[in-house]
Amino acid sequence: MSKEELNPFKIAQSQFDTAAELVNMDKAARAIMREPLRVLEVQVPVRMDSGEVRVFKGFRVQHNDARGPTKGGIRFHPEETLDTVKALSMWMTWKTSVADIPYGGAKGGVICNPKEMSKRELEQLSRNYIRAIGRFIGPEKDIPAPDVYTDPQIMAWMMDEYSHLVGYNAPGVITGKPIEVGGSLGRGDATALGGMYNIREAAKFLKMDLKKASVAVQGFGNAGHFAATLMKKMFGSKIVAISDSKSGVYNPDGLDVDEAVKYKEKNGQLAGFPGGQKVSNEELLELKVDILIPAAIENQLRKDNASKVNAKMIAELANGPTTPEADKILKEKGVFLIPDFLCNSGGVTVSYFEWVQNLYSYYWSEEEVHEKLDAKMTKAFHDVLDTYQKFGGKVNMREAANIVSIQRVETAMRIRGWF
Ligand code: NAD
Image (cartoon, rainbow, N blue to C red; front, side, top):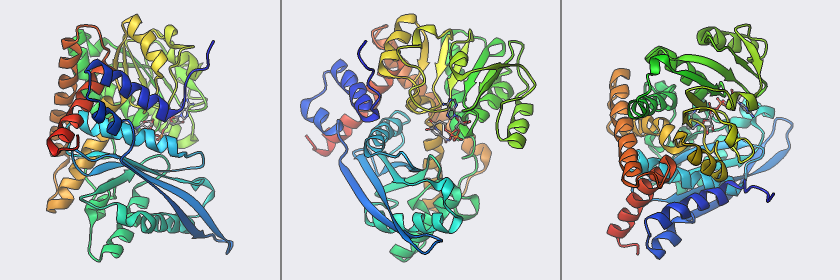
């Protein structure tokens, strides 16, 4: 058996190639979109608490800005690679395009282990990274946000450093900030909530009664725990399985998600939660459920386990949980899949709302944010569903979403005269 391709940038390019082929896209447009427009690699020196100066490597990649300034998170991770950042920047272009917000795509990262760094060291790393990429970003150029192991505090330091660099207050340079310095209400659960609106629309299309639906959620972090909570709260669905990196819990009669949240807060893990029987992450993916929500990490559904999936609908809150080979298998099995960059685009959409509020210095209520998010997500889902139906079974929802997004970017590039 040949080894499955797991390099994220190669996967991103292969997904793009498939969609470009389906719509017979112009050759020059393909060449532009297969690669990032700009890649910046920087050295970030930090004086550690020991007195030693360590030099960290950082990246900022801007994939495409035809539809507007680029947008995408910054990750602090020991295993960060340029290829991961490039892939994520491309996926951001498709995500902002499919959600139809006026942005392109970007991503940033620093190779470091924030878990081993003091707060002071992290602050210096954040500020020095912004100094290194300062001329590359800006409210009208490229707007970062939090991602793996970066948080609102880090965004506040970065916004402050950028404001010092340019000499005025520039909250719109970065999103995901604390509320006190220009953050938006409703950002905390925006990714999961955006996923809920997608699931609601998908269920209408599939004629699935969400009140009677059983749900398994892989991952119990920001995206996963809100997803489990909201499925119950908004639709009355039955959450039968949840998991974190260490282990999971399964109860066919339903789990008490609120209790699980409290348990995880208290114990730092789900292992030992008394509401059901133990289930591994692998087993969770194969449970007979109506809806499976991968909300943990990438490459969870692969060619070796995709055929064992027993869900009717997969709603990908995680980025890249399904490999291209698994996609083919799921398509043949007739599983309805809401692809990651559509399903989890609620986060970037509320980031966009934050930026809009920063630019006109007028802040919305949480209800307003939810209302606007619902409208955006519902429209995005139906734009993709229309394309899916137009191709009459020839494409899956991921390919349909790719078609919608790459065609919007192609149109913008054509109108701007790029090819
Ligand atoms: P998080 O760090 O808060 O949570 C991740 C969860 O996954 C944790 O519960 C962790 O224990 C679990 N996990 C880690 N490795 C696992 C494994 N091998 N098997 C099962 N579970 C595992 O992260 P998050 O913000 O919830 O992000 C989760 C996914 O959603 C990521 O793919 C992320 O890119 C994507 N996402 C998140 C947001 C957001 O706003 N938080 C937005 C878009 C996409």
